[in-house]
Image (tube, rainbow, N blue to C red; front, side, top):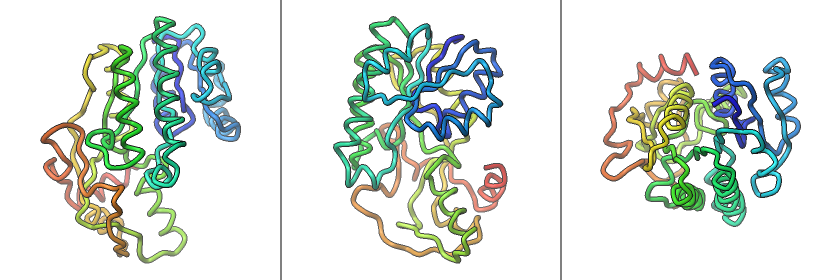
Length: 269
């Protein structure tokens, strides 16, 4: 893993992965993403490290994907449209990025003889949303091509997830935060755990999705841990009350994090 391409590399996971790869001695890490402003900010954050290469582009553009893969021995495919509500109103765009884009990545990697790891989420198993369906199909494309798949829950503190969203509202003076259903449960995963899982998968290249064992938390408990009241809005059809990553194992059945445990964990997110 000396020459690595990360698609969607300016995201929350991408930054954590870049940090780890540089610490482990990667010679070159190429970042392929669409936003020049995010690339500029990340370049400053990493002090213009000469081992990083920056390519503006979209996984929807197959030729650009092919160009980004030159000289690489590993591809980590993290680029995706990820917001459930966006997929609900824009399912076609989810298909273009999460399905067609993934098809471009895994097929180009296969043609180039490059090991490829595709990131997925808990929502890819037994999906109910356009986002989930698109990620499930992306998984199928990856596995059929010989790429490896990592499936896990939302990473604590990731962009657009519940913790930073609620924190932003609280910082703005909100006394209540929007909650679909306080009985909803979600998996808890640290960024370092996600990075380690992906790297281990890249080393071993399993034939089946790599799935971690994670604790879970109740949304009502998270609100209590953050010291804020809830504005209950009801669960939309495109969201699950409980998440799952494989048959017979849901967030409702996982080890439940207590309010005190959540308070402690939030101090490190």
